[in-house]
Length: 465
Image (cartoon, rainbow, N blue to C red; front, top):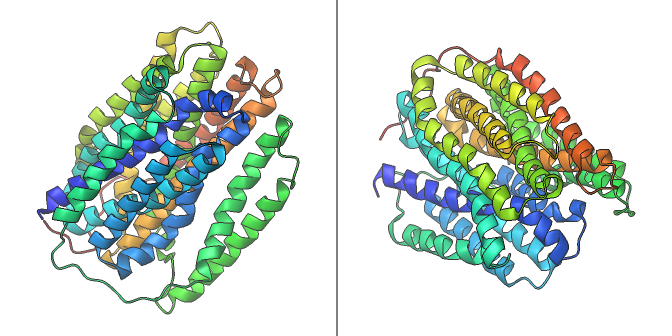
């Protein structure tokens, strides 16, 4: 199969999975009522999905070394399709959450597989353009997701959110089964370290669970274990996980090789990506809550208001990718960080009387800023690695993205809950405080953006189409 077709097949699969990931944002207020759960509980349909990905993704570095890409792809798409079917048939919240976990188990593998394939098949001087072109896929899906969700919820009901996605997933699975073949593919019979897997799961689960329990307790739910218990357990497990990987990588057996962190360029880019994803998923959660609960508009309107920003992000992707190939990351990332901070500070003034066009314009500014940051940062961080660390670098990058997304979701729901004067239901004071927190975090992004490298890195691995 032609290398370009391989990349676009993987990109199309990622599109379906991101679409599925983002349709929940607008659906949460509807599900809260129909499934009779609290805001903090319902947000686990998003946080639980992201958390599962964060738990599974560290294993993908091992999977991509141990098994052929075709086998990894077919397993991932099968899991995603099964989870989608279960979600469509779910009789209640518990089964729906379990189905989202199955979906996430397949989704987790796809992004590292795509990134590693690009690094392997695309020459260094064209990676920025390729990453930017793929932004059309990865940005349009989050834009279409909330809008599609609003249309479906207004006409068909929440189960159809999954019935719409399922046929597309099955087509991608069938195409991959028939045509996906990579020539000269190498595998390494490395052994899986069984101790690293539970350490990773407990570490990431504990940290995000602790944040979510804070939000649950703020509005009267979650009276079981105190939040500090999973937070401490997660932190201790994270220390043990890191120590285990440092020990294993000396023998080439690490579940997740941490050597990419020794490169300053990789680490700086990773920190900025982490904070950027916290902001992005915070917006995906906050804006639908603000539009539906504060401005009292429908789910369809909420989804429609998010559409222009996401579409613009996709349009800008190839342009920014080409700019990175020519000028490097620093100018793009600094400009994006400044625009992001300005937009978030302005968002902190939104209230019940704010114009709908003001909200659309500000969200468009946020997505433009993130587009200017993400393509250069992702390309720059992975371009710094030697070829034998591509799979681990991609897994680290994808893990950080999902942990940041889960933490951002939990953080902003917690802030809204604690700051709302209505006892947990999102209101003007709660939403404004959450936007202020996001804006304060963006100041750190602006300062850190000046640490990015001014020029593209020369390739250290072998790549070619």
